[in-house]
Image 1 (tube, rainbow, N blue to C red):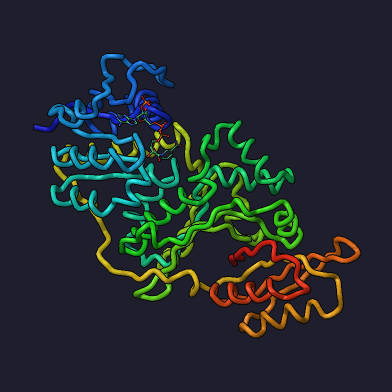
Image 2: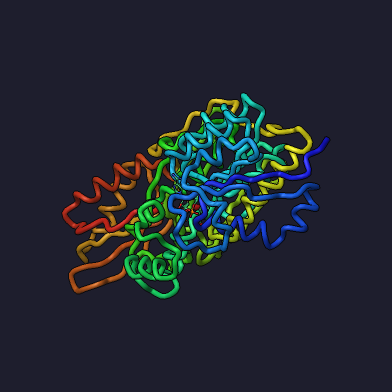
Length: 430
Ligand SMILES: NC(=O)c1ccc[n+]([C@@H]2O[C@H](COP(=O)([O-])OP(=O)(O)OC[C@H]3O[C@@H](n4cnc5c(N)ncnc54)[C@H](OP(=O)(O)O)[C@@H]3O)[C@@H](O)[C@H]2O)c1
């Protein structure tokens, strides 16, 4: 006989936990009709049961012992929303050992320990669903695992961190510097008190490791993802980019290079204003996926937040519930069948923006151009602006060149007596 009630055990009632409870409550009737069974929250584990909550919940549901959830035979699905690697990993593995499918929004756990978790779920034919881990409310994991599964994915490129996109939008549109824009992001509740994971690019690094692993059917380890944050972007770079017709964005890119090799990287980049990601503003996220059959597909929406991420988590809960009712758990398991080599950053080819301060003297341009030439780097454009009677600022945009060659050229240019400072080097993505 089919189950009439599915009981949820939730770990965590913070930003995403409360959004999940709110979505489940708000649309309860239609969700239950879609599943064909009732959904009940049986237990919620938190650190502190007496803490005030964003959503009102019956106090008797709360426990500060996660094992009250994980080992409760009545709990059908465990929803992990505590974050971090430990003890989240141990909790997820315990749930799976106890035969319970798991829904999680934990990008760090998945990016670092995804292999162990997917294997444990696969061994028991259980679902491990993680739509909320990338792109918040934007559906991206399920579309890539299902609707786009017939494609060979050639490239995934996205703005996957709302905090940094908000900061870069403020800098570009209001002319503020990085520190001030970060303070505003914190005041608006878009940035954590410790914003390191966002501004240094690690949050985006976890997300692109997950997306690349799905796209290329090969496990991409976090450590293989080149990662550079936005802290060195200045007001001057923003002004130059605008003048040259570019937007500056923190992009996460996973690209197939050959049947055996891929590149996976996170860094700020200049995007031409006509690029589909250039107009993604504020805390919004967008992900462009290119499949060999479908061409370009773009996903856009709120990449974080309580209700948007709650929407993704509840979508997974519905899917997993349906599988439970039909005995079809573990239908879509780990798809990392292949081995792919991640190309080191030195071998990645892009165009570059190089901004430098130089002495305003004859022959300076020729000296710098000469160094680029020695390293086989050809120049697409160069703009010079006098900043004082003795000094000028020059911005070079190169044609595509290997990163290693550009790094060597910059090191040499920095040693030229006429060059006072190479202020910044940023990649330009067409
Ligand atoms: N925030 C977002 O917009 C967003 C978006 C996408 C994905 N995510 C992911 O969703 C997950 C949750 O993030 P969040 O922002 O909701 O975090 P959060 O607001 O800090 O909430 C974490 C919750 O987990 C509970 N908790 C922590 N350690 C626990 C433990 N050992 N046992 C039991 N409960 C424990 C906390 O309890 P107390 O409340 O008692 O402290 C809190 O309720 C993370 O993996 C995050 O990366 C977040």
